[in-house]
Length: 49
Image (tube, rainbow, N blue to C red):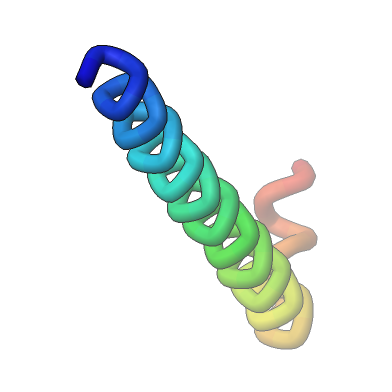
């Protein structure tokens, strides 16, 4: 019984880790899009000053 609980908990943690990695990838993509949009709009120059 205890071994089954450990396996279930490990599986749950694996799923949470995968979700976190997907969220991080999504944030990185969104950040790149935002930076590109800012560069196109000319806002990047004002932020660097």
